[in-house]
Image (cartoon, rainbow, N blue to C red):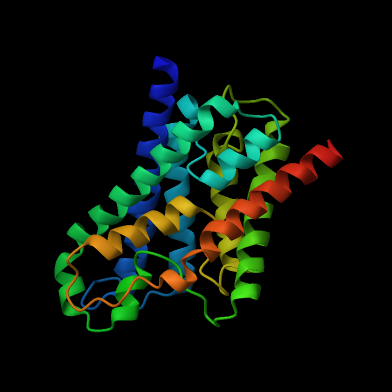
Length: 243
């Protein structure tokens, strides 16, 4: 039990770092009067890759650095992670994502106040589609997460790390993977591919006293949750069938 608690603690810290840096770059690029304002999509996708890398550096040696409920579920279905740890990992990831988003808000509070567009403010917390088509948006999140989890599972067969997860890839490959998914597949929906990266910050947006905010778009919120979960499940089944 103590060992599981320690692993969950590192999942919490790793996911906190992931969302702090990931949502942080979106805030830095899109909120008014920041020095990074208007830096663009390439900066966002690169920084998200580095955000995942930093989370992996911290959590990888202890927990395997899942940092994503879809990854945890996919690994469990594939027999690479014990079901006894699934609930604890997911709770830790969701809490880490929530507090990471709160930290971004506190850090950029003056810039949130200086930004009038409510959609921009929401976009620093969670994803939204470029073109709203819920069925296709679901497919985009499904496919991006399928790719993420399948590659993690393939790398895990090498057995280079004691705990399977994004840490199985190593810092540089995982960075390249996240950047590739973002640059190639991320433009349609903002590539949540991770419920802890989207739902938890969306909850933070709903709760925080953000000046001039809009609703948290709960009508779309199921897409970046169920899409990644289904993608992780499909990736596990693909892995089982092939390996």
